[in-house]
Amino acid sequence: MKFKTVQEAFNYYRNKDIKEIETRAVEIGKLIDSDPKADMETLNIELDGLNQAKENIIEKRSKSNKGFNPITGMNFNKEIVIPEGPDLFKAKEYRSAFFKSMLGQKLTETEKNIYNKATMTNSAAVLPTQTLNEIIEKARKQGGLISACRNFNIPSNLKVPVGTPSSKASWHVEGANVESETVDTASVSFSAYEIIKIFSMSAVSNKMTLEAFESYLETELNNCVMDTLNDALVNGTGSGQGTGLLTGITWDGSNSFTYADKPAYTDFTKMLGMLKRGYGANAKFVMNNASLYNLIYSLTDNNKRPLFIADPQQQQIGFILGKPIIVDDNIPDDTILLGDFSYMGYNIPEGILLEVSRESSFKSGLIDYRALAIADCKPIVPEAFLKLTKAA
View 1: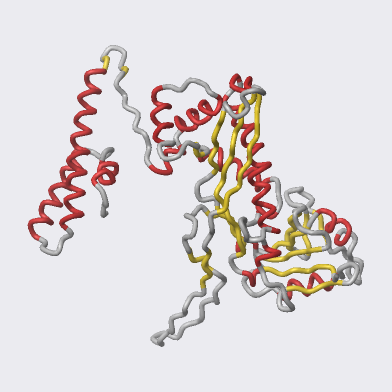
View 2: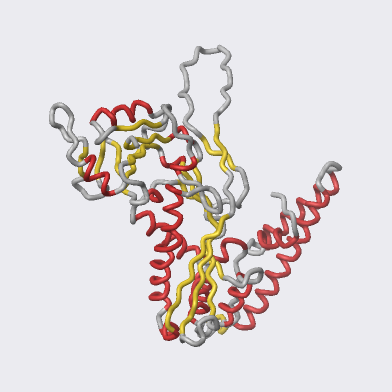
């Protein structure tokens, strides 16, 4: 394993056993002495990290022995290690420090240290990982297109490959040569657009419990940030905001068609027939609530069999020709989409930043909170989608 810095090597070895550290140090010494092609700089970095980790373990043991009470079995010198990187926002100490800070409540010394480290480069605090996950999960459970789209968490403007359906394997004759196949992949690169929401609460909110405040935040941020993102998944223009399905795909005779007054049963069989191979297994129909009940609910075939089949278990809205239905009121009236929506993606690379101000509403006795999310969305593979809409 290669380390770029001594700190990185130290973090890796600091919780290892001293015997394991000493064994690795001996191995590095032998490599340096015997292998002229060895990466000396990298090995020396690792060696320095090993030495620091060993010294740290010895020092911690010394402190532990001094604070240990053999009668009660208690250790009063237990050291709390502050996590690094993304793990910091997962820590329970950061979670409590975050909500206490938002409410203006007093932090413990450990909470102060972890919160100061998290906000060292930005005055706004990143929403704890668990809370962010619960907001996204709540948005998905409430339905809409966001429930079926793929969630990314990658740096903005970084191009990443996304696999597309490939051909199946073939039977092979023993000993015969097999030609390699070039796998078709799409790539996606998300831009960095801002979603901002400012909301105010009474100054007495600092008397709320952390759990009550977290629940309020989850609801508020889901209703503003995630709803904005869900709308952009459908209607986003791509200019200063995400790119939606309706605007980000070139709709023509190869992927869309129209009906005159109301769609016919055969329009839906035609849609499924037009969907390219590989996308059908995970395909879903998407429309708004009015379209579902005005256009689909009473539609039957020549044998009076209904097109729409309700889900008796209430786990989903229902099915059209075996494909699940998603209701999203951001879809325009009389428009129906079909596709594999795992090829429509949205990205929130840095979570949601939350900043509090107790000065901006000084005269009114309110506390202002500003939520900021860097986000984007766009279709990844346009051929995975079809559109049926009413003729103009």
